[in-house]
Image (cartoon, rainbow, N blue to C red; front, side, top):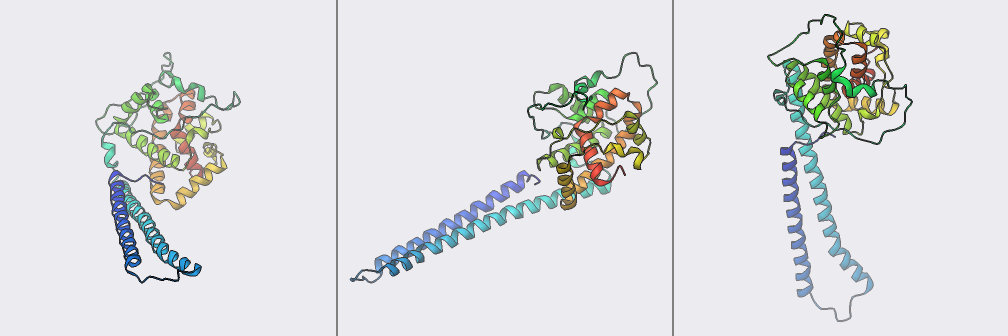
Length: 317
């Protein structure tokens, strides 16, 4: 579920505190009335029977149960109202950003936000299954010094500084944690480029939202895809020619992603926003990369999210 904003959370807690206060007041009033009835009521010299005691006990306890049942329901309704209001606010922001073509308000600041990443114990895998995983740490040094190929011009928007491909690839994988200083610095540098900032923030949003449903990119290693398939996709080819890019085949992950796209309007808008911007990034960046860099890019968390959502959405045919 989408996290509530701070304002919505404070509003919900305030409403629940008021509801609890009302419940305590009603409980106190009822217990006072019961005590008053017991003190001022007529004495029964013969003593109450079993049925009379049962009726009296039920008459005392049942209203208390009803009071706190009503309090629980009112508290739950307060939470749902706060979440609904927060979701409407987020949705309106996303729609405005999609209609104007501008980044959301928080994208104006290049400071990276934390991404939900689950760090788990390494699982044994075949050595040849994912060749790019072992190369991720070398991302900033991937282009050989002897490579004298002329660099293709890259479209650049805004006044922010451009970043090299190694820094961008490391940023697209996001930091592994607060101690991953090299990746944090790469992400900070990449966010200064307005063109890359939109891709990174939209990728961050979908990865975080899917992590909220226990869908982690670290658990979805894709099948190896030949670099020429990525180059054909960057050149504009679609359909069966690039179907291999749907390289994530985890059935449970695809079911969860499909359900989120179908049922969660905010996630659907965010996912389409991400797919569009990552598609553009592939067209800009991949023609400049060598085979090794493409392999590392394809194994990043952002690329895994792209392959999963693209497969579920039918982007690859």
